[in-house]
Image (cartoon, rainbow, N blue to C red; front, side):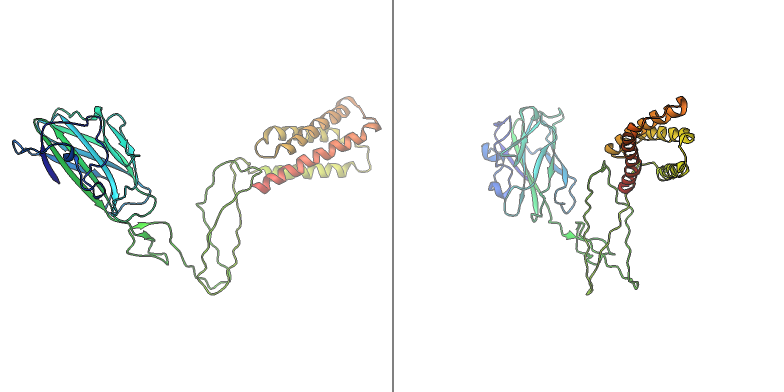
Amino acid sequence: MVLFSTSNSLTFSDGSQAGYTGSPGDDLNTCVLCHSVSPSASITPYSYSLTTDIDEYYIPGNLYHIIVDVLGPGIDKFGFQTCFENEEGQKVGEIILADSIQTKLISNGNYITHTSNGIDGSGLGSKSWDFYWRAPLTVQGKISVYSSVLLSGDSIMVLSESESFSEPILGCLDPDASNFNEQVTTDDGSCLYEFFSSASFLSLSFDSLTINGDILNQELLVNFSVHNNSDSNLDVYVLRNILSDNVPENWREGTTFLAAAIFAGNCLTLGSDGNEFGPFFFFICLNMVALYAVSEGVIGNIWRYNLLVGGLMGVIFAGAGTFFGYEPPEALMPLQLVLWITFILGLGVGPLLAWRDR
């Protein structure tokens, strides 16, 4: 900590100009540069602390909370300025406001300082500001935070402080990995694993791969990285087993039963006029209409519409023959054939594609 005593003046009540944090990049300039130095009238116990949740090493891209606390008995006005620099004096990372009333960013966000609403003390001769800092996305060597604080009362005191954080060593921290490095300080997800097997096939299964969202009729892409450290060629096969919550488990049995019932019904009508099976086909077609109603989001709409059209026409024709003894004329036979094909496509192709997607 560096302490200066100056004449009584708070020149920049709405935030200081950039470049007075005491950092090497600021040529070690602090708030004292803007205030004429005078001998201190008395020695007063001033204290200043810079608190962060950064450990010994910063982690690229992580967000950290910074708190600047200052205590000065008899002081009623306070000001500060803070920045972050690497060893080359370059400003690094991103400063983010936590309180836009009492603090603000200056010089394209490279510095944070007080506002006119953030200079009054608590009444006990103390003041606190807080903000956030996001570490750079790439390693920048050792990074230091520099801060200069102004205390204004009967006289003005300028306090400066800095704290440094070492460059992290990125790599693998898992002792079971083949590229484990005990010198690493931050795991970057680069661990590699070797698997040995006397069998000709090695099976690796992952139960934790969960993908949420609607993938109906869409292509799903999942990327895998396989590292082959052996001298032999490695053939990779991926077996997809996608489970979707919106496909009922009993659909396979239900649609299989309906298909078998329709097939059996058609076989029974061979060699007969088919009228005695009118109630049977009426029931089947009614089930197709119900299947249309409950299959939204599971079966593709084009196949659902085939179900609806074929099912409704089947209900009409089969119901007319069953309940009213109506027999359609020969001229309507091509229409019945088209409706029957529509019906079969909806029942056969729709559920089949739904189960394929599942």
